[in-house]
Length: 261
Image 1 (cartoon, rainbow, N blue to C red):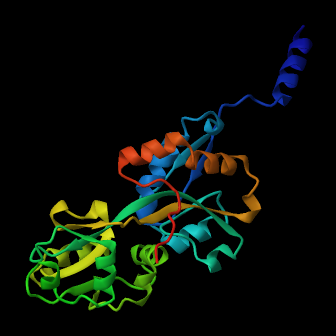
Image 2 (cartoon, rainbow, N blue to C red):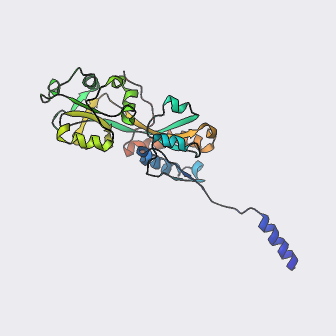
């Protein structure tokens, strides 16, 4: 009897143990994408095809390029803008998850509530150089912009071609610098741009005919292209449920707008 019991124990020891452990995925990358990617995976985790995974989206940034490199060794990295052709040519693919709406902002001395997209083009093309031409004060228009590769400026150049030839009076490097400058005496008669959520409503200039946003998304390597979770992420990113979540949360859905010349 004792020998029989030992044999049974030996057999059980050789059997694989059943487990409910889930695969834990960490998605590192560009800082601006953290909030919306966290929201995306929170909603995705409620779907049947994602039940065997848990997801972690660190708030710290390893930059847009860092997110691309991160996908060398992990299933997903996250990006803060659309990938360039060069980046896509390195066996990388992107899934746009959302767009953060962009807006234009003006200093509190301008006293103009709204303009059209045509007027905006004339401002940035220097055909209109003084606010008095638009019913504002007799003050020169100061164009405050960003570096060539900055994500908001890159999005504007993609969607509105006239931004490709803009020459700024002042170039700032960080979002908070634009926020502080617009609110300062130096920025009283300036115009700039950025993510709408960053600015107080009193500085926002409504531009009729304008729609653009920062494309935030995920990047994966070609070697993982057939992974079932990647296919599920692609599908969910374009689902009505995710679209409604984005609109409710103040984002734009991942639909490429037709560029306006």
